[in-house]
Amino acid sequence: MALRNLSTVMRGPLGLQQAGLLAPASACAAQTVGAPHLSKGGPSTQVRNASQLETQQKMKSVGNIMKITKAMKMVAAARMKGAQRKVEACRGMVDPSIKLFGDNPLVEGKSVTVPITSDKGLCGGVNSQVNRVVKALQDVRADGAEAPRLCIVGDKGRSVLTRGMPESVDFVADQATKQAVTFATASAIAEEILKTDSAASRIVFNKFKSAIAFQPTVATVPSPETIESKPELVEKFDEYELEGPDRSEFLTDLQEFNLASTIYWGMLENGCSEQASRVQAMENSSKNAEEMLSALTIKYNKTRQAGITTELIEIISGAVALEG
Amino acid sequence: MSSGAASAYWRVAGMSYLKYSNLCADMVRAALKEPAKSAALKRETIFFRGTKWAEGKPGETVLTDFTEHIGSK
Image (spheres, chains in turn orange, purple):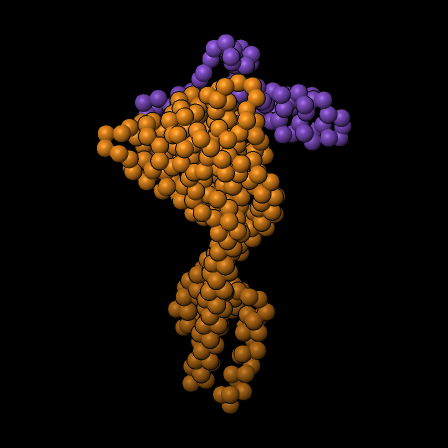
């Protein structure tokens, strides 16, 4: 007898409820009207609905974030390919002078550090790598020696380094990556750096190795006076026959070109590393969003199932009580 | 910077090597024919925002923008 009644009750409000994802209000209303002594279940059902709604909203926003990060990853991957082609072409510009003079990181006297950073964020640890190297370069120097001056390229280096060591900063250039970086832009920035009149310029950037690896690199461009003060470098230079001006003027020209091309190279390398790092960062965040979404889905389904079970019990016990 | 009788004429006129060589490059680009010309002109653009800092304080910000003038050429 009791069993038959139960099945009729079940077909009633519960059938309605199963139609929708969220328990419809009509089911709750029917319940309260039909069984006034069960009105305690009313508020608890509402609370459950509210929490489910919250979970649903969270799921929606996490899903949207995942879409955005996936799109950003695709864009960065496409940009990285173009940037990589440019970097490989540009390496030929700086290789000859590196072959000629080698790398001379040890330079006495006043020097200027040129950190090259990105203008935009959301690209992993690219900029913090450069900033860390710059901070180390500022600290490592002989006793009593002057701290290197700073000429910062890029917005992310500016925000960190001008806060950390404002008195060392001479010049800041940013927004250069808004357009495709050109040699002309690098030359204009190089001219500003030349105004500091230093014995050496150290350009700090991330060298692009592969899509998953980049390396913070320091390229040193010595001034003509520095080269002339080192006999072994002068000897190397004198192996070449020169036409036109004398050696010191030639070295001045060469240093200007070297500085501009190294900055150009650094900007391209760093831009490429930035995109590569962004691909990785966005992949990680897409993965995290996906994990979060599946956790939320499980939570949502569990609450829904629990709600259905609770209601079933309420209905059954209500029916039994009426029978009683 | 070295100067004197032996210096190149453009240095005497107060130009740096970079200014001189970029100007020469601009001249070469201007001598190109289409469609190579418009592709090359894109490489002539200069765009950055520069701020001079002195004694820990930023000075005036100057936007160097040589993109409009290329586009209108």
